[in-house]
Figure: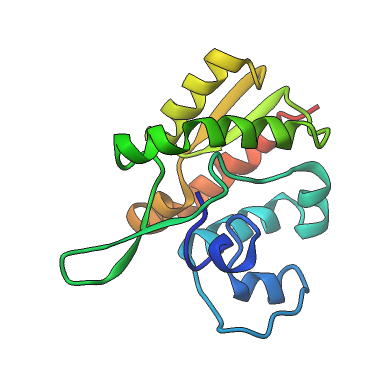
Length: 170
C-alpha cells in the first residue's frame, strides 16, 4: 500500500515529490517529500530505459491503494501495511480484490505480474491469485524499501535483477 511520503502524497506508486518533479517532469507545489523506495524504483526505471520507456511498458499500482499509518509508542507516525494485522487484512480484503479487478479492467496485460516484496505482500498476492486467477505468472522481487534499508551496498545487483526480470515481458 502507498507510503506516506510517496504515493500517499503524489498518488503515484513509489513516486515521491522529488521524483515526480525531477524524473517525471510533473509540477508539484506542496511540501517536498523523499522516500527511499522511490529513489530505488527510479534508479531501476532509469536503468530500464527511462521514464517514458518504462511507463510505456509497465503499470504500477498496489494491492491496496489506501495508505495506512500507525503511531508508535513515542507518538511517531509510521507506515502500516494492510497485512500488519489480521483485523486490517480482513477489513480490506474485499476492497483489495475489487481494486485488482478494476485495474485489470483498464486493459492491462495479465500474463506477468511483478510483485514488489517477497514476504507478506507476495504471500497475500499469491493467495488472491490462487483464488481469482488474476495473473498467469507472478514474479516476486525484493521490496524497494528492503533493498534501500538492508541491502544498500549491493543495490546495483538488485537494480540489475529488476531490469532482467522486466525484460521477460513479450
